[in-house]
Length: 287
Ligand code: DGL
Image (cartoon, rainbow, N blue to C red):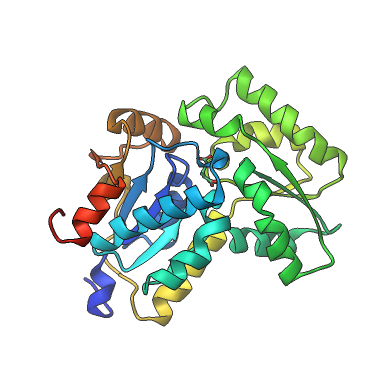
């Protein structure tokens, strides 16, 4: 049974540089079990964390365009690196709701911190953008935000290496400076990082609150869909029933994604979304 407007029956678009956004998809299927997802992983261009602001805006724009062509009703930018620099641009350019992952994480961290000292681990691009600091400044200028770039994390997660010695060493290297700053709350400012939570937890200890922005992001999406009468209330679906597109190797994406999520992803399709293809779609000569 599908309730709501005609828009409600459409899928939700979601994108990331690779498998990281699956941590957001996991939360979407929990909070909004009747919805369908069209997921795009830009695995030919991963990691995003080392790209410039203009490169990230251009990539986010192409992917959003691709998802809009697929007929989605909303887009979740399930990547902090693009959310931190491209969200305003996307919101201005496209008419459908576009939800990012920065503000929901900061909001929850501010609610949870007791000593006002919040750590953020993220990609180099996200840390350089100071997006979390700006969001915190807006919501509660009294909190202190300490950022730490973690460039080794995304390649480890994309290779499915989330519990090896290498992951342990990298976590130690990046988290100890934050522990020394006496943070009591840690934002996982990259959607790849929730897959490293067991190792991160061992290093920061039981006292530090770990904030996965997925929860707040999907809560925000849910509120928007309900307000616009666009929520789909049908039979719950799982990872296998969703639609996946990648710009790189679909077999690798499926293998690593299934290892991280612990369930089958179904079919994964490879699509190229370079300038020429986007131009062709715009001119109506490709679909
Ligand atoms: N998972 C993305 C993020 O949240 C991108 C990571 C990357 O490709 O460097 O920033």
